[in-house]
Each structure stands twice: as C-alpha cells, then as structure tokens.
Amino acid sequence: MPRPSAQPVASPGALRFSLLGPLAVHRDERALPLGPLKQRVVLATLLGSANSPVSVDALTEAIWPEEPPRTARKNIQVYVSALRALLADDDLERPRLRHTGGGYVLRVAEDELDLLTFRALVRAAEGQDPRSAAPLLRQALDLWQGAPLGDDLRQSPALAEEAERLQLRRLAAYESWAEAELELGGAPAVAEGLRDLVERHPLRERLRCAWMRALSGAGRQPEALAVYDDYRQLLARELGLEPSGAMAARYREILAGEAGTAPAPAATRTARAASTAGTGASRGPAAPGPAAPAVATGLPPDLADFTGHGDELADVLDLLEDESVPGSVVLLSGPAGAGKTALAVRAAHLLGNRFTEGRLRVSLRDSDGGTRPPSAVLAEIGARTGQTGLSGPEAWREWLAEHRVLVILDDVPEERAVRPLLPCGGRGRVLLTARGQLGGLAPVHRVSVPPLGTAEAVQLLAGLVGQRRVRADREAALRIVRACGGSPLAVRVSGMRLAVLRHVPLREFADRLTDPAGALDELTSGDVSVRRRLARGWEALPEECGRNAGRLAAGTGDGPFGLSEAAEALGCDERQAVRVVEALIDAGMVTSPGGEVTAHAAQYEMPHLIRLYARGTGHGAPLLTAH
Image (cartoon, rainbow, N blue to C red):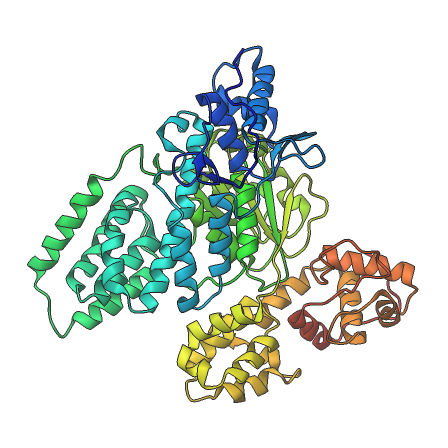
C-alpha cells in the first residue's frame, strides 16, 4: 500500500494550482511537494474537473489504464488522504476535497486554478470588439507555462487526452487573439507567431486563414497565396475535401489585390516549398492535430463571423469532452433561427482533436421539411463513413461505440425519428439540434440556445454591413437587432440585405422592421427567408398545438406573460392553461424561466418572430385542448 507523502501544514496560506504547464501547487510563493506519480495523477484528474465529482472508476482508469490492483479503491483513499494533508484541508464544514455519492470533488476558486482563470478570460472576450478582446485573450494565453500537465502525467492515457483538449482550447484562444490583433493592425507580429502553430497543426483552417490574412497584411502576398495553395493540396490529399468558401473568398481577395503587381510564379513556388517543408516535418504523435485518417467526413465549414452563445458553447464542449459518461448525447434546443446548427458546427470544429476519427452532420429532415426515416439516415451515415454494412440501428450503435466520432443529427423533428440512432455507450458522441425539447428522450444533456444579447447582435450586424455604417447610426442598428428578437438568422438576413441595399439608411430599414404587418416580408435576402423557416416549423406542429400558439400570440402582449393572461387568451381555466403552455414549451414555441418557480408564478415568453408569424397565420378556435 502506498504511503502518504505529505504532512499537514500548520498555516494554510493562499493556494494556487497550475495545470497549464507542469502540474504545480503553490502556497503563497512556495511550491508544495506533490508526491509520487499516481498521487499526482489523482490530483491532476480532480483539477481537470474542478468543482465537479470524479468517480472512483474514472480515477482508477486514469491511474491504472490496463489492470488495476485489487486494492485500487483503498489506494485511491490513501492518495486522497495525502492530498488533504498536503492542502491542509481541515475545514470539516466545507472541506476542499470531499467524497460525494458521485465520487471525489476538489473545490477550487476561479482565481486559484489557472485553467479556470483561462476559461473565464476567454469567455469574457466572447462578443467583445477587437480592442477589448485582444488584451483579455493575451492575458489568458500568458497563463500558459508550457505543455499542459508535463511529460510524466501524460503517461496516463486519460490525462494525455485531457492535455490534448487543453491544447485545443489554447489553440482556439490563440486563433481568436490573432484575429482580434489583425483587426487592430498587428499583422507583422501575428504572421511570425502563427508560423510555428501552422506547422504543428497543418489541418486547422481557421489558423491557416489567419496566417493568410497576417502575411497579406504584412505585405507578403506571395507567401499568403502559397499558404492557401499548400492547404488546398493537403486537404485534398488527406481528406478529399476543398477549403471552405470563406477561405476561398479570402484567397480571391488577396489574388485580386496582387493582380496589379503580377507576382512571379517562381516566388510563389519558393514560398510554397518552404511552407510545405515545415508542414511535413510537423506531423507526429506529439502534435494535437488529427492522429488518424478520418473515417467520417461531411462537416460544414465553420462560420467565420460566428458571434455570441459563448456560455452555451462552453457547456457543449464540456459535455462532449466528459469521459465519465460513455456515449453521452447533447441536445441543443431553440426556436427556428436561434443558431443551433451554427453552434453545433462550431463545437464540432473545436473538438476536432478530441474526435480523431471524424465528425459529420446529417439532417433528419428532407428538402421539403418532412421527417426522414432512420433507414435513410443510416444509409447516408454509412456512405459518409464507408461502412456500407450499417444495416440497422444495432450495427450503427456497435460501430459508433468503437469509434471516436462526433455525429450531429440536425433538425430532429420528434423523438421517434432519432431514438433508434442514439448511442448506448462507447467512444462516439451524438449532438442533436431540435426546435422542441424532445422530452421523451432520456438520458440527454439539454442546452437551450437563447437569443443573442443586444451587443452580440449589433456586432454580428456590423460585421455584415460594416462598422462605419453602424457607428454612423447606432440607434437604428439597435432598433434593427431588437426587431429581430435576437435571432441570429434574422440579424444575418438583415445584414445581408443591407449589404446589398447600400443606398437604404439603417433608420429606414429599422422603420420597416418595426412595422408588425411587414416585418417578416423584409427579412428575406436572396433564397434565405426567415418567414419560410418559421413556416416549416409551424407546419410541423400538431394542429391543436398550432391553434393554441396562435391564440396565445394574439391574446398576450409583446413581453412576458403569466398563467392568468395565458388562460384568458386561450379561453380556458388556469389548470388547462398550464397543460397548453407546457405543451408549447415542449414544442419550442414558448420559453420558460431559467430557475425553478411554480407554474402560477412563472413568467413565460413567446419568441418575438414566432409571435409575429403566429399573429399573421389567422389560427385560432374557441375549443382548445392540451397536446
């Protein structure tokens, strides 16, 4: 049996834990001795899930990945006891390290653990303008002291995966910092800093795109063009894919800027050769890039101007990275146009190093909005993965359990359409998006996708119509995004339309949107129509549910409403109104309060655009029943 390696410390002092580099614990300025390797594995595993329970099974797997001894549970108790002594954890009422029904929890404040501080700074930078975001992201990156967890702890496969996830978060933060710095004119410094990262992560498109921008901004156009050519060839060779439309557009912009100078082909070839040499030398088991050829392809490109929903994105990443629940399922729910698919795709791109065998998105509706049968969905998945033998749900579950794959099942219409496709355990993960709550599915981790905040929505609009145009009439911009109800789709359509109608003042367009009779008619740009998207969701509702939603929209005001108001609008008593409102919540037509509150005291709300559409449908009937 292992011996405790630490003695109680007389004076507690201030503790500081470090994971973003070699594992370390300091009391004031003094480094504490952390004991033998297995004890350090326990500490690192607990810190990686700080303030959340870590099961004994997860600790056992981290310490003894192959054959745990019969005394494993007792040994873990000894390591935990030694850590308590090391941390001077003698607070009986609220111990720092305690055992719960779900396992062991290490309680750490945000400013005590560099990982928590890093995450908080990155979240704080979400949705900020570049001038505010850049210093926050720089501060977050400065917390890193080298490769996370050190070489010794990465002998544990579980901690090796945790280190890769941490490197991924660092990489995403660096990309965000680079983009912010580029907006502020720091191209030369960014160009040099990105070279090494691109060599170590050759398939990161966002990183490549930032490097292209930086090189071009630094006056090094031939090298910028070479970055694109190199990436296009690498992507075709490795995955059989083409660069995204956003990156191709950036390439065309640089190429158009070069047309007047006609760079010599030899210069371009020289730059490309140098870049290719660096890329080829970078691929190895230590790099957090893809470790195995992808077996699943078909992920849409990430939105270059993805905005907001930082908390929800963090929740999704944490849930999908959680190894304690094999085969876990995450559901993103929200009304049409809430940004569920964009959020799911962003998460999938950020988790590329976690799901090394592939990521793909499959729609559960056909082109007409009808429900696709599971057999058709499985046939598409089989074609995407090269697994033609996926003859039924059982074969699919077995394959998913054995492969580190993330599958987005998009726009789920109802429970029975997706229930046969959900995993029963194993390495694969499924991310669902749906307008409704899919209350009949369990166990599922549910994340609601709320409307964008006003500042986030204005930022998205400014990215489409131009910062100068928004600054010239910020009041009108605020009216536009408020009339869009915080819907990313509606804000995006408004921006795309205004980008074409450059002669239309923002104030005039805001006036159009604030006219309830014509607002939805204005929210159309090319083949993208908010009304059409809302109509598809409405047509999928059961008839009674649609009638009830129409009466509720017509009979309540534009803001939150209580149960008595709902009962009056529906023409029924409050007991029946509860059932109707809760059925509409389940269908994604009404939102409920965030915290626990009784049904009679709750304030419900119908999303603004859904209310506008519902009022215009003419639905309504005197006899209402709960669906």
